[in-house]
Image 1 (cartoon, one colour):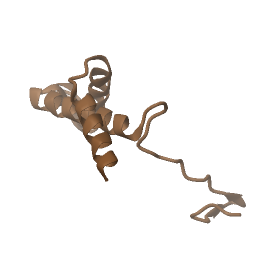
Image 2 (cartoon, one colour):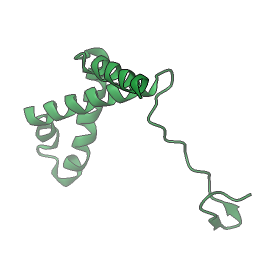
Image 3 (cartoon, helix red, strand yellow):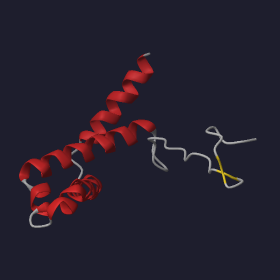
Length: 101
């Protein structure tokens, strides 16, 4: 059986696509959504504080292309180590909503 795309490169079938589910290992879907929400909020706060601009100063286009990734990485660490409590609220809201449906 061929992969969903069905591309053959030099007689070798292309690799099957990676399963990119939003749920991280050991987390429920609601927990994962809450964690992602906190990461997004931290990233936006850091960008508005000037961290993205600070990473790209003096580095030209190459630095500005990757500064957003740096900010998102810092935001991921902050969301894990210093949670704001929004992830728990989002998780509670999502689980309550699912039960009432």
